[in-house]
Image 1 (cartoon, rainbow, N blue to C red):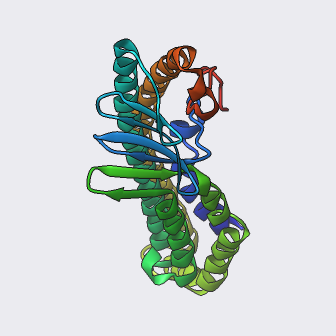
Image 2: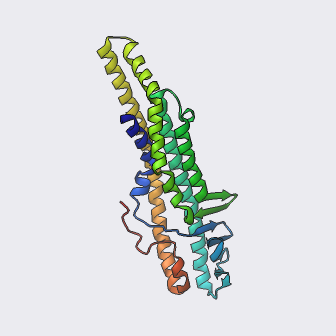
Image 3: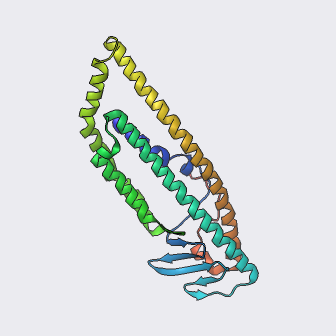
Length: 264
């Protein structure tokens, strides 16, 4: 149904925008990463895999590793780079999801006359997405935890239950939608055909304004994503340099060796 398509498109717009799909870099995270200004820690099921502190000291499975001053300088640069990368990535993800929420809210309000908060099924589905985000990303002060082990939670949140919620919103809102149509067609100025044309123009204008607003914000996110991608490419090279010096780090690399992989 058209209304279902509109809802799905509005939600997917920012999450599948250029910010995600047009990036040509790869960041892989199967374990949990804890980032703070003091140290960077990679863990699996609460077991520490490696840790780098603010002085460039390096621990592998809780055993201190012998490093040279030059290696410690590289480790410090790597820790700081990953910390900044993590903070920036989370900001973009949060803003993209907020943008999607805003788009759905605007579409529902226009179609049904009621905001997202008054659509329980859709509100519940959006809450599941937000809960999944919270399972993956946790912040406390200047410490950030990104749980790569929980990334599947986001796919699950957008699974069949989410699609069913959209259909439920459409079905439960049909009365409101028809009421809006009836109000537009049988009241106001002009004859029936003129009122139909006016309604069509109103919906077209709404769609154009929503698209323009979303595009503007999504383009800003995409530009930040491009800058982030360049940073990832630099970190990839730095990580490969570190692995050549400290091969024991190789099994726990965070970045793909080929940072130019097109993700389209």
